[in-house]
Length: 449
Image 1: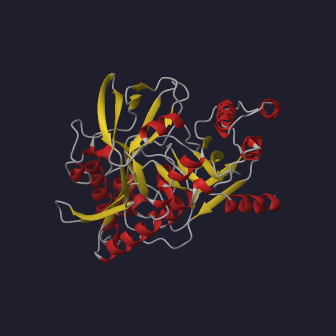
Image 2: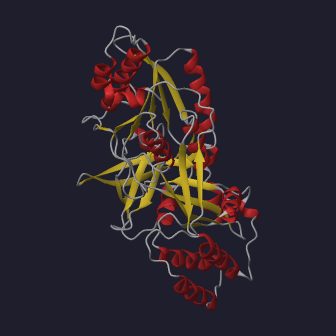
Image 3: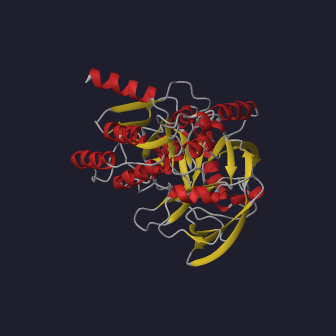
């Protein structure tokens, strides 16, 4: 058992771990044009991919057989490849046998461009997409706030029917990415299916600097100051930006917090852990489990920045890293979740640079909430379920009382704050303690953390 603990720590230290429910993910090489293309050894790239999958791939569907994977290696390496593109096609065909939409191959140019999630910079229209394995449809996980897709009204769970009049029927994610990406300032036309109705949206391709964390103070009708913090994506800057926001709000004497993780598609594993630790002083944050059964548990480090009441807003677009934070808050009884059931992606990907400068995202682990719940495909149900506004609200109205989910979250937070204030003012000489606890037991567990 001690050896397992040592090995898993080494494993996670040497890997770049990501938790996106998106296709627009990853890191980049400095200059893909300078990457070594193996003119006489295309098979080396194929075998590199094969070896990574054989060694580290976590099969969550129960369909991966090592004997079959070994046979596939013999097949792909017995063929001749006249150019690298043929080898890349062979890799994509090889990976299609895994039945895992998150284990994907990226050619050097794609790998170089996909730096969104670590740098906070987006080139494109601002959507995260996934291929639904059951329907084979291209589904939008979430638009990123402030991007052309978001401003055009693209929503989580929208299906892409065509890209520039090219049908997406049978199209893989890589081909969709190639069509959606393009020169900055040009447009791409998407045909969207939503609630049984199809329509077209023309979106401008842009490069956008994305700030991960937005914060402000909202004043309630009864005078409480609420710290509202929205995290749009768990990139490398999110934890630092969150820390700065909390420190600033604490100096302004807010009574509690609303953490908005709606339509947050995920990001870096460590970022989600660091953010959780800013609210959770002690207790398990998340545990990760590899294919070999190695388990690593991440806990609070005793350095939480606030103990004040907390409500977390979630919806169908809250995925991966967002679900880690939500699960940690819920299971540690640190706060309440308000909104709609989350996306349901409990898998961890590692990004690998291949021998020729191309890349591979491979599913290497699954994560469990502190209570041991596997939320993959199921999502996390909020404590209080609230639908979003029937009629769309303006971006500037998100996080205000015109925002139906926020309004419900604020109402619940005020309730918790009031219970906490009653507890702090409780006088055992003049008050019936048993009656007080009986009348307020539903909220006591949240207000005392």
